[in-house]
Image (tube, rainbow, N blue to C red):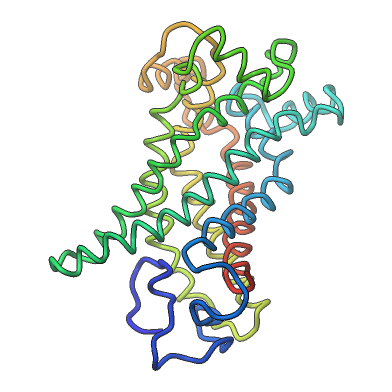
Length: 314
């Protein structure tokens, strides 16, 4: 497959003249010649495959995410969060599904698609100037993560719809958007933007930087099923580790976005408030992190394996 790098953009997966023919398996996955078959154009397929992978993940893991959100917002045990959902009934279990469905399918499409596009664009310039390839691809990953933050309003509305204190105030996704825009303006939709930016860029750099090396250290795969398993393990481990690393930022984001109207409180002050309310306990600050670890393990395993599978069949 040519020179091994720490990043894994499409340009690194495209076969050269001396590489295996279409459909032949290599250690990093089946190799398919660009532009052959009846699939999408190479550049567009990353957006489509990322979006479909995120759709699959959201449908499967949304109830787990809802339990986790209650823990992040209220600092309650998992049993209490589950009890709250049981009390609200099955009808409300998928309340708030549309915002993450729209947000995640779009952000994951942007994450994979823009990373490939930025990598292709920046590498063309970097190679001419002799810039380090790792640095160039890290910049591409950070730019893709920053672009994802444009969709913060979907996370904002998801937070409001999942918070039971707002059940009577916001009827659905469209009503929540209309209310925020009418009463508070566009700025209110971007409450919590700073922790999103602090999370997205660095997590993208680490995800794309470590995905390739981790997969190379897994047992060699010879079938499509074993490749899917390796992709699931690779994506799941990375997602779980990054979920723990950036968990406090998600706590700050959830707390900030649960507020409607009023002052835009800086991140550090929100964190200080949560820290004080939870008695200065690291364990309470990270309450819900265990469930988040397992949810991220499942979610990013599904996303990564589905994405890589779709790249081979679309």
